[in-house]
Image (cartoon, each protein chain N blue to C red):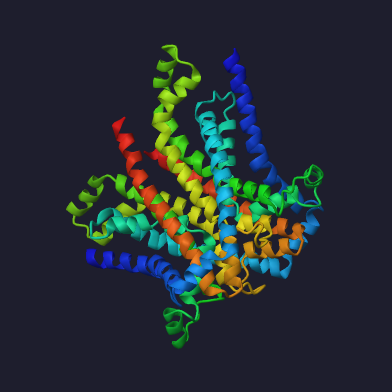
Length: 269
Length: 268
């Protein structure tokens, strides 16, 4: 029974995870190593990767700061009304339940060329849809719950006793935050950041809709993979996909290592 | 006094951020969908292609969720209970579909099941086609939703009180009987919670499915791909109408998750 169950589990893993992943390695190198590097060295690949990088940097920066502040506010804010906190919780979770394509549609509906706000920003000389600002907004929409969902449980578990002690001993709020709160939530923040990086790099549906997928302008790494596979450019698509896949595996390994650190911290308390 | 007013200012800024980022965009979809009243909304949704896309998505998501509930619970059980070579490795691989970009996941399945690969070739020679049909969409959904049930059920198996199980064995019950009568009922709420997460993910998946489904309108076109097509055709009204249906269903699923997880907490 035990052996059978283990064999079944391994079989499922092989069928669902290992076979598909090995197939991109196989396809990327099917005509040798040189076509792989040629595909990576194409100007559009390099441009797409740099667009992805810019988006990731802005999004992670925004998510990091807003995530920490908002989590503190959700856990610590003195809530006058009882229904406000669950409401905020639902709002924070909403992006999880919305299809990325719909996330992109929202931004087009709000800032598209024929809308009030779209016209306003157009006159101000800022293009939002089919440009970087819209893509950043779409990615932020999709990724911002990740950070908060990591920090809130840790903050709630922590309690405020040590912070109160710090304040009674005469420390200011900033000092208290960096000396008392930060060391405890540090690993949760790092964990949330790595998750956000992974999701921002991988975000596809929302970015595809908002960016218009214009080659050498708004094309990101994932939309390039999509374009290449639609154009039946199999080797190129798989080469970029392999790059992204290896990145995801690296992220996974980092997360695994962090999980252990995070748990160690829990037990230390 | 200064600190209090600073906190108030901070709170207003944060709430406006939430409002602009989440509440405003989602209401924009509802406003656009109903902008011309109830009847045009209904006309968009009940159009043959839109309606078939919604039904197909619902049908396949439910099926994929069901498969996931069964194999997810099974895998969670095996990973928690049995120590074997590679257990840790498999455990860390569970999250792979979550961390992979969805376009990459789609391409993986496309390369795996396509005629160029040995496996796709072999499947083709025995007359099985798993690309550009409903089976392909199912495979995509199962791949994408793989971590959800496992990750919600796993901690429950870890926390289980061993006494009940031992009592069941002492009273002469077999392993299978104990699993179905003692273990399964106590993890059942988390199976439902995980399944609902998987369901809502399967419902909204776009990247992986758009590459392998073939997107035949009325046959293999799922709702999110339909929405994408409508956006490309500048029919935002139609896209918003179908979006409303999708958002409402997955909101409902999300509320169910909250309900089941709350019940679990109060039980402990």
